Amino acid sequence: MFEASFLLNLPCLVGATSVDISWLIEKVSLATWETIYMVAISTALAYVMGLPLGVILVITDKGHILENAMVNQILGFIVNVFRSIPFIIFLILVIPLTKLLVGGFIGTVASMVPLTLAAVPFVARLVETSLKEIEWGLIEAALSMGANTWQIITKVLLPETSPSLILGVAITTINLVSYSAMAGIVGGGGLGTLAYYYGYQRYQTLVLLVTVVILVVMVQGVQLLGDTLAARVIKQRR
Image (tube, rainbow, N blue to C red; front, side, top):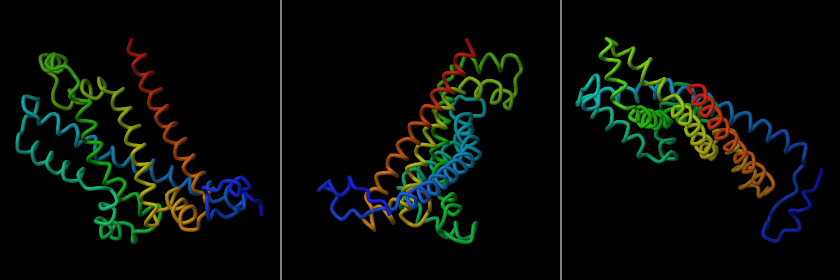
């Protein structure tokens, strides 16, 4: 057993217990992998559903290529309803669906269901915002050359907004990192579970501090990667 001696010297860390370093490394490594795994899969699935939804919200808007007020308003209302629900409440609400899909509601795989569903409306709005930045003149030019709806989406809308979409992926991933930590409170796995059950409930402050540091590093890394990729895309266009 190795004492985390600096904890004993800090009066503010009342109740902190000693932690075996080898145990800590093992637990933190596993929890970090679980967090990366569930966030990566959830982000990918959220974009599979959220990207088309965002595109539909744009092209059915007033004055766009497939204007349809009813479809736009219904989808917009649904997106706003889901976005208004705090994640911790949403996590509880979708327990029956989670059980139906994966056979339980505790663990890393089960956490992907609420994480994905909570991210879909967020992704849809990010995509919508990005696509609305395109000047109508570009779309009009494509229409004048005989481009159909699919060609406008794949050749104009998505390529022109690719840097913004990349940054959107980074923002979504960062949000899901924080959501995954909240899911850990109800046994969702990952760093959130480790921090709550060991760092908080068992007063192992070192565990809590390490998980916070890792989460900060993960967020910084994701944002840096997103900024780098977006800048690279912009540079290639010049």
